Length: 295
Image: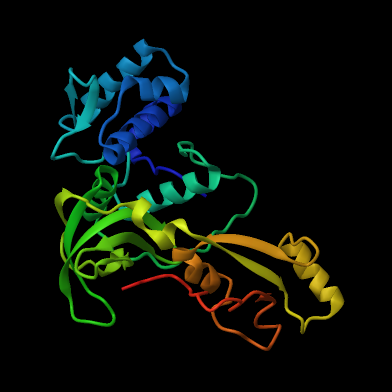
């Protein structure tokens, strides 16, 4: 189980700790748009002299990837940046984000269990070019628009001007939450449905603070299916960590539909074997919509 970077075979001659630092250096430059010696010093607890040596070594091994700006005292990726310590794929980036989100920090060290069997199930990889992902990431980081031809399932392909604020993984696929200038609304846009290379535009006028459904939280009250026996309900309640037979789950309104789909609660089932838990406060108010605008 590798939560981070798969090193290229040619990097095996480097010491393990050196490869880790160079990989972090590269990933930071690639996704944050800049990297400093202070980044390595803080995360690895090394001296400034050691961090400077790492930058010198990286620039020797990956010539033409970084340039130094003395005014900002930082290194920036060159236009022809080519990953040297990473595979350079969208799937790799998504695994980094997913692992970092689960652990609450940047994940640098690969975790490879020995002596035990470990299998991770994942959905089929969705199509997305690595350069496109970098540009989308840059647009979110710099709060800028992107212009892209998007193929919806409900209308012909058309060019849209989007102002994205968040990358979202719904358990099966990645999308961006963005304000669409054409729809004049916040919607979800599946990355695999971009059929042209996105182009960076001007500064975004709408951001995450203006997205009402993103900033509003709803509470889902979950309980074991009443069709289960008392003993079975006790097992399910313990499995989900319920208190007094109930689980209160706070979710963003914009993500509610995805959470319900993940839990198989978007459609009601009478058979408890099909649906072991139920959404107890389903439809308690007239405005209890599922919230996700997706295109």
